[in-house]
Image (cartoon, rainbow, N blue to C red; front, side, top):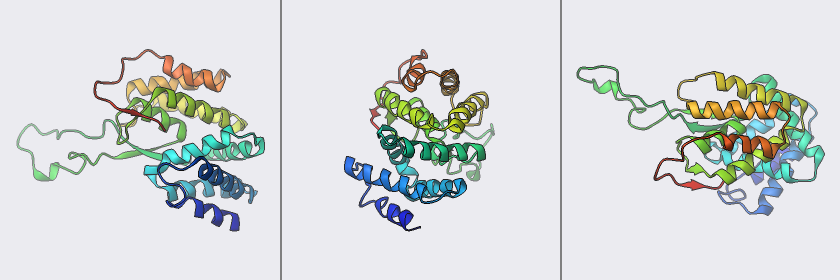
Length: 240
């Protein structure tokens, strides 16, 4: 339990702010792995991972993805398997540690054709758009492709981050098998406001390439290779 407590210290804003140093990221990633390794129970490891995400908060979920990327880029195969296996547990339970992005289709005009009652103009109508929890792969894909509360994620950053994440998840047989199955199912499910048609098409492409055993770089590139019109005029893109 002590290692977990130490890890929580480095997830405070003073240590991991919006632009943490490489040293701070490496230290946080090391403590995350240490916290997971301190317990043999897969369910407990998943609870640790989810608590980290909660403590970071939904606005800093990209920071969690960056921590995963640090582990993916390391030469510590044991740490990679440990983290990937924890995601395998999450996938078996259908309980991925998720981040929130605003739903593209959640805000709608009232259906009434006559006078509109004041009660019909909810907070959603005025822009308080509901947000869906997404796993890290889906989060990156939606962030790159859809209008959300965040500045759109650039193609190069999306490709790099997605390839690293897939390489990490491939360390676990469960994660490598179950995650593309989940994405394929998501691509078939027209959840209200969660994914645009274009995003579902990209998720389907991602799942197919991943299940076919293509390399992480090839999987990420396949998503970008799906023909699509450029982002609307006026969109600003950013790095992770």
